[in-house]
Length: 146
Image (cartoon, rainbow, N blue to C red):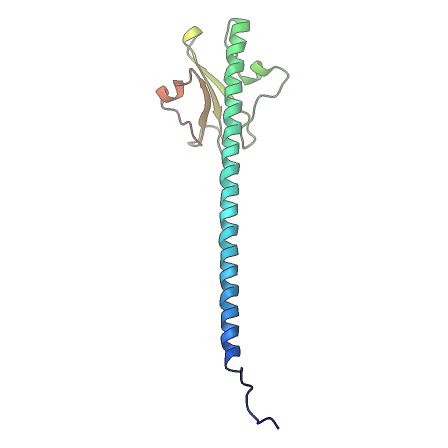
């Protein structure tokens, strides 16, 4: 006959339960940290790709303007004239890049501008995505990073 009372391992059960809860919480916390790190990395990579794509469009726009001048002996009046029937390049936020030429003749500086994240021209987040000569934006103090 078995004597009445708790089984011999009854004292160990609450401790096992606590250990299981702690292990579960540690695993959940680790997964949460991993998820935050993955999302942060994705956002940073995506932003970097957007900036690179925008800069590439700026270099293309300035090159087309220089090519237009070589072919027509004058600067284009805007980005549409450079590209003709083609669409001019867009920035990462879907706004067409803008061509601005300062000066005349061979001494002119060519700038490709992005309206920036807010998609509105004339705001503080507008930035130069390409210029010719390359250091012209630095010399004039234009913003060059989004």
